[in-house]
Image (cartoon, rainbow, N blue to C red):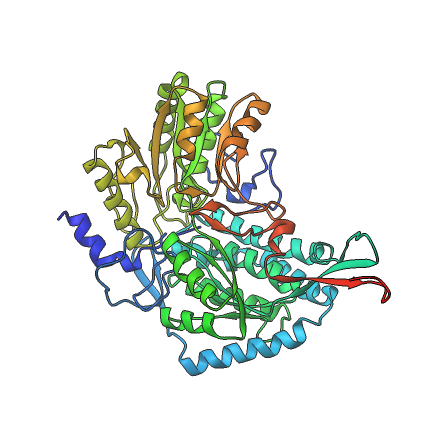
Length: 529
């Protein structure tokens, strides 16, 4: 057994995964707040948790050992130093929290949209006014570059405010046109919802769950990732400071067993999870046993397709951003780079050169362009995946090692010659690892893109927009972007198919997931049945 495999068996229970800003998007639709600066390029993880913490972002096989670790602990991944540890709730404290949420819903549901919007707008304003205060814990707890952390704060504020202004219109009664009489569909909130959320975007993930559901009249309880407890507490405090009543937004420091207990509780009416396929199956099954609605966003292995007529220099610029934003720790990060033969050699040369120019360092330093992985466990998992890929025939074109410095840093890595029998062909690499494939033509590119159990996002680069649209229509995912990496915005639906989950977040679609669509029919008492 290799050293990497031994480490994996010891730490796998900590290895997790999954998932920046639209305040003032540039001409390419991406906010400068979330675009890192890469040298030489004109560019404007796995959740750490203990065995008794819920595996909302567990990746790959079932762990074979369970190390003793703190369930909720801040550890700075840039130097490995523990910052702060938090205790889990007792069962009695959890019961009090659920009871408070249920009591809150009884009144919150009857607030007008305008009354709820006052709270939401205030919450968004607080985030914008105190960007640095919110951004620093993100960088300290999971290693996001500080400028990207600021961008995430702004994006989260945008999402909350978006629903403050639009919720009433999205949920307005819908008049139908029956053959006789009158009919209308009304929208009403479900009740108390549970969200199980990952570490990689500690506020954005919460905003896209809490923003629409609070505005719809639901109340939310959130079990956040074990490695970002200070961010979790900051977001709960935000809503209280904005004027939300106790129980409208509740942070839960709870264990795996307690998560099941919450799902089983009859006062909980719906469950939303962002995490791995394994976690999704577990939580969705538990919700299903209780006949409760659930939504799942479960990661991806997005294809970045480069057709023969692509603008190569601009495409490479976006390829670096698509791979390295958030150090590659993003569900919609480009993971499989599929390039037609005519451009393959030139693309990989430029791509490799750009990745090699990234500068590791303190993520608090604006000059740093390569941050750490979120946790040591995340780094060890990626190193092990690369080792396994090479052992099964892949070629390591660059990187593949940890960087010799304090903290959980990994060299930008490119793997090639990955055959269908190689585990890497099917796995998601959640970090700075790119899988490179060359294909003969457009049809082979589409076939390879679709040869995946995942179906979250993807992108197509071509100077022929109509061609890009045709290719996009053939790709089996929930989202495809043309001449741009897959990304997120308040007014665009986000979600996938296949093993990437079900349901949608954001836009007008996201607020519809946990509301009852009630038909109210008026007919003449004399009318036949």
